[in-house]
Length: 607
Ligand code: G6P
Image (cartoon, rainbow, N blue to C red; front, side):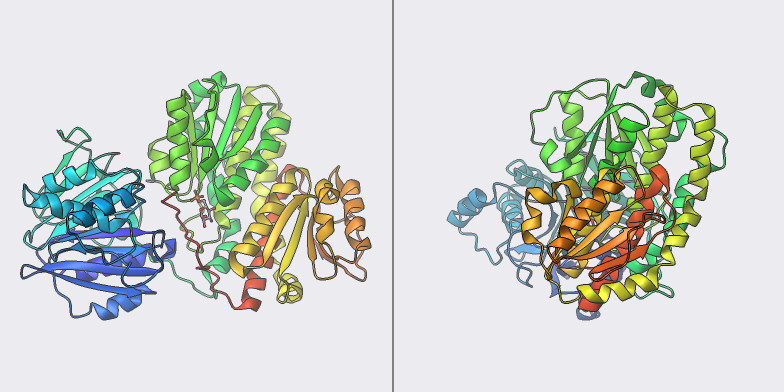
């Protein structure tokens, strides 16, 4: 989603801005822009489409102070005039992530004051508001005064044409950090944008405003009081993520799953026993106190939580609820102080998940655990306990390896809690550890089915809709399969617990409706088979991903993709793989932009 980069230095910073935006590209955006201060003027370049175009257009631009942005449209269509930075009367320029909720009211006020609006964005009000206060004080004070009128979420960068060595930045509800260099400073919405210039980083807190100069910076809290924040050394590395032999990042990331799982499980698989400490030092004291789990997440991460509910209740015997973060954050819920609140997030900065975490804390929850793929993310920093999935950078918008590593982490959580609660004996623990060690190679075996799945995918290319069915532990996998397909192939896909078929979706089934079924060889298999008969009887074309020995036979209108033997509780991880591959190959057939599907973003940093 939207990204911010800013710099003040004693050298041309245009390439720093552009390279920073390139690092944020994978998050999804539809236009980009930058502004530099040069010779007392604002020099702005904007373009719709890729950052590469902005790079070409700004090749001859020079400036030692500037801000840049990738925009993912919220207010106003993707267009050059709506791209950031937004400028007020050739003096003030602003880039903004987030959403200003009272922008209409502010726009009316500012129009009455004579300000002209040249875009449809909510951001432009910030530029004019700052301008309206600038005559009375410094850029810092003008920004603080403007911010006091904003309702909503923001991370902003501000420069003024007559202030050649200073930029102002602020955040509330959207991530922003300060990069500390030698005689130069930077801002960005994500550390990866700054690794090209520094590893020293100050994470700004809610409500912080920072005045950034060449040689120093000053941070002010919500009360306007000057405060110190620690300078951290980022552990991220600047390796560019290469595609190698693959055609798309999504395909590469699907194939990286054996390694990603091995890395995520490394510490556990190399030891003989599982201990709470893998979730953070305080887990040893906290876990014995908890009597229930509340999982909060969005999108694919929410599906991981749904699988975990089955594991946690069945294996660990602990009550578990799973809620979509954007719903939970606005619900007046009743907190149980002995609940462990688990947020799951690939990026660690999804606005709704972050807000849900804070809502949980405000409601009275004391124990929080983040399962996340980005070490220095907001969700990690704001949680008491943490588990880092080690999937590595995930570039494709459609999440793949992050999902399966989240499942691995959640399975570990289940086992640790099950052990603490006396639900598994040492023998069973060893058996689970054995299965986990074997998981990467089991995933490799499933990946070998790729050519067959590519072949099957041809049947989907001309379809408008698809139904996905699963039961029990595999119902969330059906949901994930449908989500993958709709995200990247734009085929309308729905998932149902197979038992619900008769309660509605069966009405949709005909020869044009492919029905994909996850068919593990578990205790619900016979029930699932009856559901599949119901589909076949109505002419529906079945695509069954069946474990060995399920005895579901290939027939007219019944296509079988033969999976290995049933993998017990870890089966959902294996059954995810062919559905990811199916979505990928259908998208290839349809010629869509697999890694950057239309309208979607990798990191959803606004509501
Ligand atoms: C976006 C991404 C999804 C992801 C969801 C939650 O919608 O496109 O792939 O599942 O956000 O993101 P998170 O980073 O919190 O897991």
